[in-house]
Length: 191
Image 1: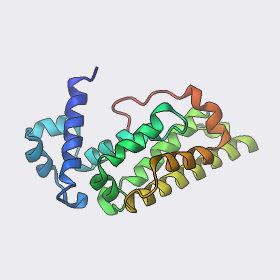
Image 2: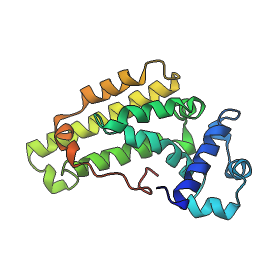
Image 3: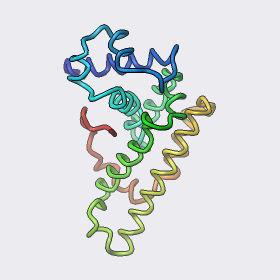
């Protein structure tokens, strides 16, 4: 069952996505979100630091779930992004201050390095550890670029094709460790 905090975060994220139907994501302000959501400024600040933090949260909900190739939620996560094409297609082209993608890529890299026991530089001292860390870095970078391209082109391929491409490119070190994957906590998203 969702907490009140989770429900409010989701309400603000949904409001942001609705605003993208009539306004450019890069032009949406915290004030726009507060007015449309009909909440107090302090309520917004109780849940997010600024509009960029909200963008990261809204984008991360399906993308983080979709970052786990082969998981039951992966395909559903990509399909969820299809429900909000105006938001996600604009997300694919964002540059500058509201650029979500660098944060998402760092978050994924750190998550998968930790999952595979390669977050510590000591674990990367031998050739196998270095190869694993480099494989994760390349895979995450490629996956992020593919998602950006998919979104910015208005998601022409079916989500199943995108998920298959991600799964097929998954390094063995990641695939072997997927069963140990910890669920992502509510507040754990790229910033």
